[in-house]
Length: 138
Image (cartoon, rainbow, N blue to C red; front, side):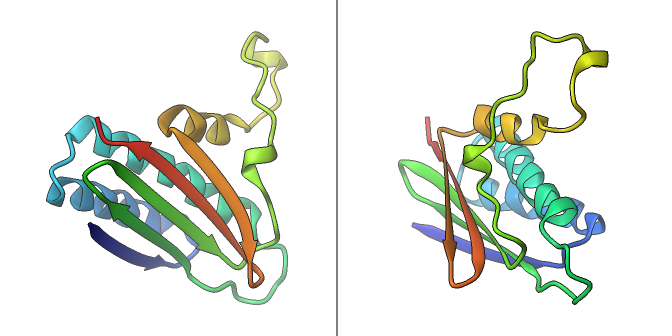
């Protein structure tokens, strides 16, 4: 099993570093580039949600930790932050049947994470959000 960890500041400017790192971890473990792209995109959406919504206090937030474990059977990643508690697995899917001009802005990031992964799991541990994303290696 290969384990990787990255800490990033909760700033949008860190996203290219995050996605490049995810793709490099996947490549190092022999995962196909389309698989790596999907996992990088899912993690990008998860981290963007943290950056944009998790911090309401004026105090400086702690870095966001991203952990990846790749085995012969699956890819698993955790996004860990100290923002306000939020369970994205409880968020409803957006109504995609509505015309664009009638849809609420946002909401597609969580939907996209669900589409790119096999499983999302959330827990609150020691005052921190832990979002786990899993995808079987095929």
